[in-house]
Amino acid sequence: MKKIAFFPGTRKKNRRKRKPRDRFPFLFLLLIFFLLTIGVRLVSIQAVKAEKFDQMAQNQRLTTIKLVPERGIIYDRNREILSISLDKDTVFANPLQIKGYQKRVVARRLAPILKLSRRSLYKKLKMKLGFVYIKRKVDKNVIAKIKNLNIEGIGFIPESKRFYPGKAIAAHVIGFAGMDNDGLNGVEQSFDSYLKGKPGQLIMEQDLVGRPIPGGEYKYLPPTHGRDLILTLDKEIQYKAQVELRRAVNKWKATAGWIVVMDSQTGEVYALAN
Image 1 (tube, rainbow, N blue to C red):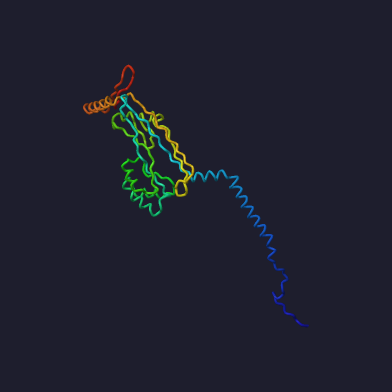
Image 2: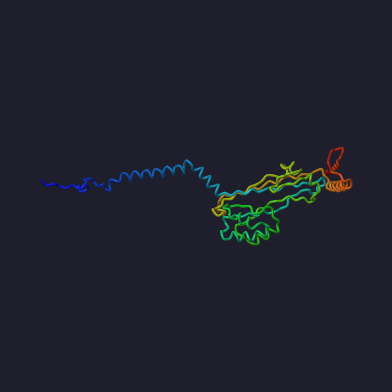
């Protein structure tokens, strides 16, 4: 009787090889699922959320610049100016229009003219924005120097700055206005709603580097200037009252003093010093 040696693995496995065409249904279903996913996403973007994405795109293209109105003039009873707004220009930059290697050059050239720190100016120019304030309410002679440099990406906006010709005359009565032309004290604050006017807007549609898009949206809403105000104060009487009060306080070594000059019949105040 012959013995037959059996070694594992010598018996041929009777397995059917998978043919390539057997994979077709799976790949077909995978392709259908992929196309359906893209279709649903397209419908969601172009139909369901179309308004939302359209608004997002519009917000990215539109740049809105607030235009500050000119404050009204404050006069004394004789139409002598006590407070007035003078024309100034605000310097701004569009960092997207200034190439990377030029930002340091621009900062180095503008910093001494505007009396700003070169480091802080360069930091503003590195911002990925289409509009950045550089310095507000700059004198006309300084603006002329900057314009002569003809730097691309640097622009100007007309604004106004409050000026008090009489300086200390009735300063505590008139008060003062801040950088945004809002009254912060005295008459400037009490009658702020009459003096400050209504701000305007400049809306521009720009491309990715901040250049205006030809035929794009452009709206200019001019600001409405504030109304003038006439006080009962008399500038000359006010000045004399302040001089006499200072002299009396120094003479008598007083802690404080007040002078009020008024018409007893009408109650109009001609001077108020303290």
